[in-house]
Length: 202
Image 1 (cartoon, rainbow, N blue to C red):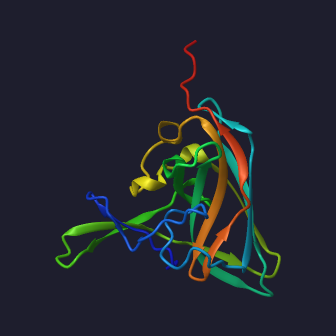
Image 2 (cartoon, rainbow, N blue to C red):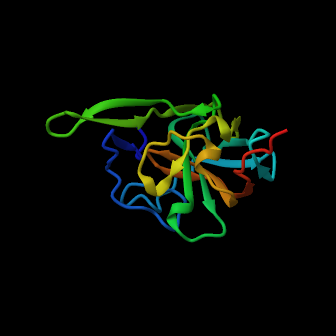
């Protein structure tokens, strides 16, 4: 399991094991002490297909993950897309969407009993396994951000809302973060403008 094993109580909506937010990094979901631990085995880059996202077109994000080790590599990752406002400093203007980037959908989750009496129910992501045959081997992917489920980072709720019903109109930095047992992998940030307004009636 990745070190960032996010666990949420449902329906009480209480985060387990996440005791602090990382303000200088993008992830508000990082466990204590892991904010500056990075995995250097792979490199991840992303790009958007459109500078502006709106309801009338796909919000396409394509990317590549490259093996930087000297041989074969297998790893489990917990991927998340983050949108961080470029115009506001409040944490409430940061959003996240756990992403199965290999299948263009929200990441799969599993539920389990937690607490001393096992009466509470937790939810956590199912890691994605990546396999590389040799150094320089790459995995290319493409996802539509509208196919994912989003939430505010500060809400501590497992994402369950559509992109444009959650993220407000603004200028954002978009970043893909992969959490692994050996630390995190962060793509360079790319700029995207979001117009969350409903399209005009014809």
